[in-house]
Image 1 (cartoon, rainbow, N blue to C red):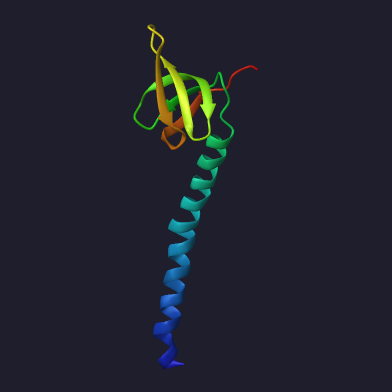
Image 2: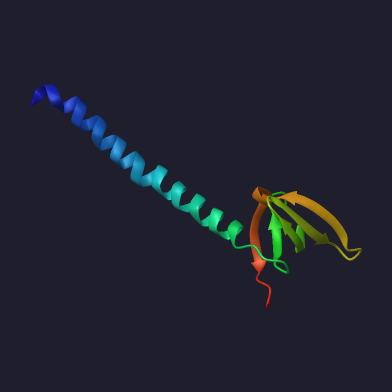
Length: 90
């Protein structure tokens, strides 16, 4: 039994590491992927760079945003969407 104590401790530490760090990060990544796949035209979003805008068009992995009072149009990658402020009412 003495010879296996080191192995048992490593397995216990790996289990703790998995449930405290790896699993929550995987759940968070899954939620972010779901949010990005459910984007619709008209949603107000915030990019990971802090740009606030309204989605005008979604084409594959490119999202076109309308930003500011001048209605400037920006094209960003879908992975750069950080969060959805409020959903469109369509």
